[in-house]
Length: 302
Ligand SMILES: Nc1ncnc2c1ncn2[C@@H]1O[C@H](COP(=O)(O)OP(=O)(O)OP(=O)(O)O)[C@@H](O)[C@H]1O
Ligand SMILES: [Mg+2]
Image (cartoon, rainbow, N blue to C red; front, side, top):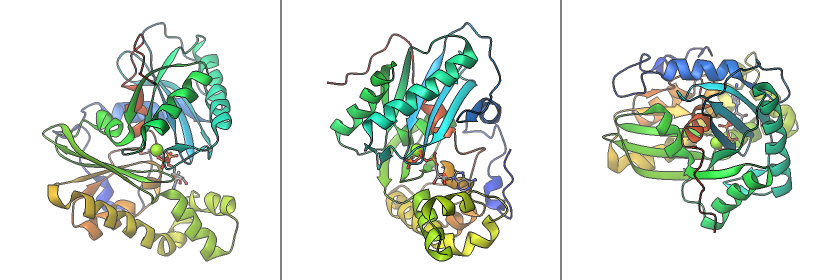
């Protein structure tokens, strides 16, 4: 599990705290073990039961995750791929190729084919774009069983009783306000990890991909913190603006950008709302998407 250097705000609620999924720790630890980076050898799995499959076409990472019937991750793969921007599929053929390849890697580990999956879109994107994500699945040989919004998917896993779930991804910040266990408001704004990387690129005078590698290198993050802090504060401003009418008691951070040490503390200080990262944040939304997949369902794409 990830260490949050100097990020005590992130220690957040203890595992199993009332008002959250009591199995969250177990589920996120299973994801960290079984969802591997593109081409890495993950554990072989012998499992013949019901599967729940989620595909998250991200701005930075495309993730395919497979859950067993108890909704625990058993296999998955992810890859850096810039096929989507702000929920819009920019590189349709590239997206299909990526999903096909991730699917093949995971099928080899499971020793069985994947037939259907759920996928997701950022809250508020146009219907035509939402459908395009479904077509990507079809192009990759997967029935699209359901289309869910990403912030709601994250809250499906976290099972927060009340508060705001904030997914800071590569391209955008998505949020879902939860009251009495129900999503009452969602939003999506274009600030995310790509902006952190652009700031690092500018500050260090290096190309984007070099800056991306530097930003995600734990040994470099303390020295980069002053450069990225204003982007974290921008995320906090976005959250404050959207959640003000709801006065949530807590922010639950997820998405890959929440991995940057200090993120929870900056968001907490800038919003004045207690903020936590309830475990490895990268797979929260993809797992929530997979939890929405049930074989036999078909999403209406027309
Ligand atoms: N260890 C790390 N430290 C800091 N940032 C990280 C780390 N690991 C990943 N990231 C960042 O997380 C972002 C990707 O997160 P995520 O997979 O949640 O986004 P996405 O789903 O691809 O994007 P979006 O949801 O906006 O479409 C990238 O910007 C990446 O650089
Ligand atoms: Mg995402």
